[in-house]
Length: 304
Image (cartoon, rainbow, N blue to C red; front, side, top):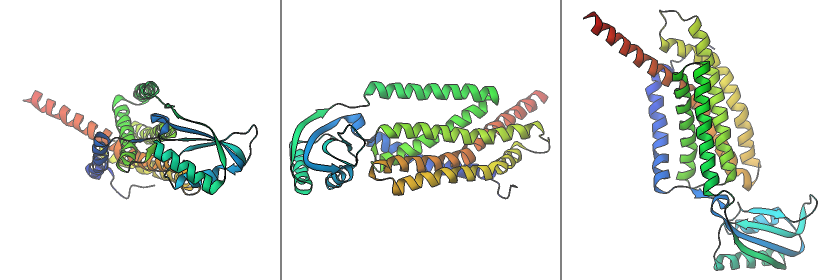
């Protein structure tokens, strides 16, 4: 694909657009934080035995009326079945009034049942596990910087990591602004986004490196990188469309429990493709041009 549009010359527009998207999210994260799900906060556990077999969909429909459709629902059965009389339900923490209302509605719509157990349970993902996840992410970034520096150069590594941080802030910010529930699957989404985004970025960096080997002195870094981006544009578009088809389909047809998971993936894949093209490589060009400018100024001072 030939360079029909100069992406690099508009890089400060792309940087501004990224800032306009990130800043509201950062403010929201600082002021109102996240809507943490029961995996982080703990919740209320119901162990119910119905007079007749019930399905997960039936139970979820009842919980939906109480805004608890994202609760964990499990059928207690030794085999894989569509319906069973014994059901485990795990919701966020409910007070006495809310528990009474849910159980009354359950009896009215699903029939008689016996409460075998009802208690408050702790978080699946505690502060220690969260801290370990952050440490693991930081270690992964450090290893990415080391690897990209070895394969390419340090400026490529820093530009790639800054693009990754952009992707994560966008996803985190949107979930904070709209107070979408954050659960254990959200952590997996963030790691998936990191893997997708850095892979797309590396493809462009690799093309830049190949073009640098035959780089003509008459061609600026600006022109070289713009040409490299367009040479990989078709591949980038095909890749992101392929994964977006899957994540959008999952969002539309996957059911209530996978909606936030699929939405986070969709946002992450889209912003990952954007940052790989419009942020990572332009950042590298900006750094290289600044370095070149500093070198020229030093030469001029030396000549004087």
